[in-house]
Amino acid sequence: MDHKHYSRLTTLLFFISTHIATAQIPKNIHYTKKEVMVPMRDGINLFTRIYVPDSVTEPLPILIMRSPYSDWNIGVLSPEKDPFVANMAKDGYVFVYQNIRGKQKSEGEFIMEGAFDKADKKAIDEASDTYDLIEWLLKNVPSNGRVGQLGISYPGELALISSVKPHPALKAVSPQGTVGDFFLGDDYFHNGAFRLAFGFEYAFSEEAAKGDTTFPFYMYDLFDWYLDLGPLSNVNSKYFHGNIPTWNGFVQHPNYDKYWSSKAPVKYSDTPLVPTLHVGGYWDQENLNGPQELYAKMEKYDTKNYNYIVLGPWCHGQWSDANASMLHEYNMERNTADDFREMQKNWFDFWLKGIGDGKFPEAECFQTGSNLWKKYSKWPDRSAKPTKIYLEDNKNLSFKKPTDGDKGFDSYVSDPENPISYRPRPIEFTYSDSSEWETWLVEDQRFVDHRPDVLSYKSDTLVSDITITGDVVAHLFASITGSDVDWVVKLIDVYPDYYKKDPGNSQFELIIAADIFRGRFRSSFSYPQPITPDKIEEYNIALHQVNHVFKKGHKIMVQIQSSWFPIFDRNPQKYVPNIFLAAQKDFIKSTQHVYHSKHYPSSIELPLVPDNIKVTLK
Image (tube, rainbow, N blue to C red):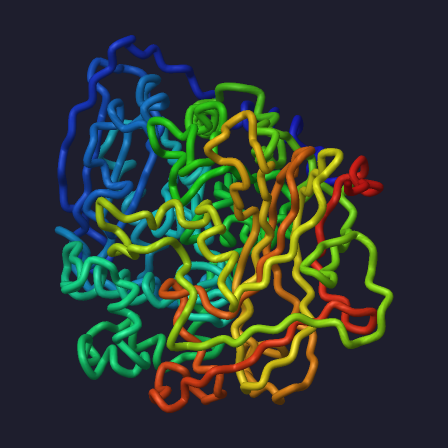
């Protein structure tokens, strides 16, 4: 029997074992805040905020959020005023927020995203600190004895860690916008390409001081600042001077090794020991891949019907906003944050209060293009058929495989001294109030599609809708004149020439899926190899999961380029063992050839749903 059919039995056993009474909650609930220092097993005390509702006599469950930050998932607002949890707060919970070791007012040493060993039961780590917090709360705060934990980004990773070595009272978690693997696809690297602007600024903000801080840039538009920085070796020699541990980790571990695998949540997550609700956004500019990868990994081991996922049309953490109906120019046509918060409330109400029937959809995923929520018993949708759309002559796309020889290709010159901006300038400090960082993955790509070092392939106008649900993969056949390369591949929805629904967005080029791949890692992320100049090789690049409808009258576009700056560092294009130690002389121009012929058919593999497989193009 498929383990996902155990839901009713799980629900029945849950109610038999708990008998949780529904609390009688006042309509206008108010919370009282208390700030305490909670002792850990080694004597370190951690700053903790506790919000308890007034005038509630029934025992309530506890919801925990743990964070390194001063203002993110740390209870700055009273829960009934915080959009992220207000609907749960109105029905009564005890909310607990704690700063982790060495951050803000907490004691101890801060080790950012350190190695985690789930087999070490005696380790003092984030799991043990959460265990000690729960133990203290059960003794000092009235509750029904059931605890949940949630959080977004770093706090989401902390929720996941707690579930790997859980306290017996921990009954449900929701890691949201969480890292899967720092080297392969989230915060710091994507397929081995280093996320320069984010890595530089975030490492400094968290490790330069105990509190939150920012690097003192002397320019507003940081595109030129990062270009003037020169080789990455200048970071320590000019600015950090070896004092930022995470940056030192980048320099010392440029390839995938134990340093990275020991930090990767996807490596230490397997059998879910408590019910787990993963949450992610299709346009999450920080941790897009993590929720998808963590869900997929844990699903392989889920025998208790504990593993679920929600995916929405969001940037990083946007689902916690009061209103998530727009992302830049993309109109969701409904407040998807309200939709999500209802899902979140139902999840914790069931596991912590015994409210509801527990019949959650395996996956609840927003479908962009149609702007509808879809429920799936399996994710990705097993009915989708991988179908390739091929690059052609004259910058066309077609579902028909090329039939001409092996000579068809397009080329461009990639110059590290003239990199392609990843978003329209100016490039502000990442977390400044004026920054466009949150929305860069939905920026109109027309700002680069006429650069000579960007290849843009476009389909004819679609005469019917095309729905893709699942994994998108690029297959590039290419050669270069250098000995290393970055490939950036973007799958784009091109709006009609005259878009009646919103004329101002006519011909808008919306990224649906995109990623970068550093060529030296084509065979192994642990053992990079130089590329032989002028040798045609195949590069397979995962663009990750989507759920999108290309509407009738739109076009499909594929863009290919070799830089995405300064979110990603510049590849010197001359192979060096460690790019963090490269010299200025190592940066060279390279001519890139992308092939589209019978023997070298570059393509994008799309997960087409059955009704779209025989689609025709006008």
